[in-house]
Length: 119
Length: 119
Image 1 (cartoon, rainbow over the protein chains, first blue to last red):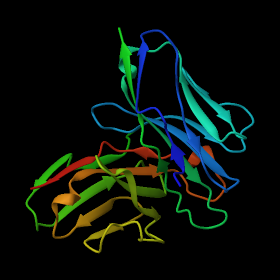
Image 2: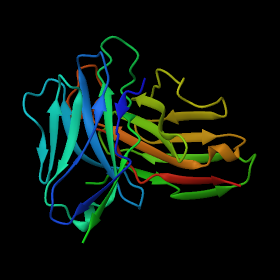
Image 3: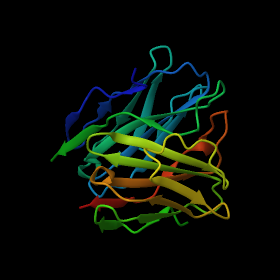
Image 4: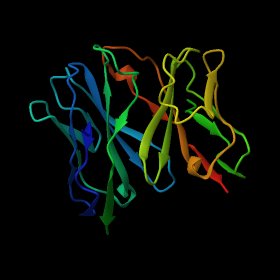
């Protein structure tokens, strides 16, 4: 079974509007972290935002916020006021704490969502 | 401060040759990760170092792949007798710590990658 699912291969958004990128995850580890990364066409993987499984509040970083719904196992990324420079691939990733073994601390990635911002 | 650096940025080699890929993590980061990104396979975890040791090498795709880390800093990924299916972008990441209780310090920061093409 896939541990990270991103169901939107591609998304379009109008400049200055908000957009939500979906991510669901699957783990039985009580301690885990969820991450979003942006990968522009240049190829570098840029860290955007982090949410820990025990965090009480949703994470926010500037125009990025993470809508964390633990019971639903979802961690959607919300980008407010989209800019042309936001056009890129976006990856949701999970790192399991490994309390029950089996984790080396590596990130498990979804297949990504390609976001295109229209002027 | 300086981020993760990787060299070379691009490498073209002939099938059967050996290649070495280098990663210089963020200063003070104890954990280092290698991933591979290819069109068909998405982002694939290869190996993880805590300090100089790699507890589990089972993520390496074949015994032609090896990796080492010296002085708790620079890491080298070596591919012997390269094959065309080794063509991919090899990404290195580092994090401040890597433990079983998930914290923001576990965030992995990526380098720009090495694009390997095997002809």
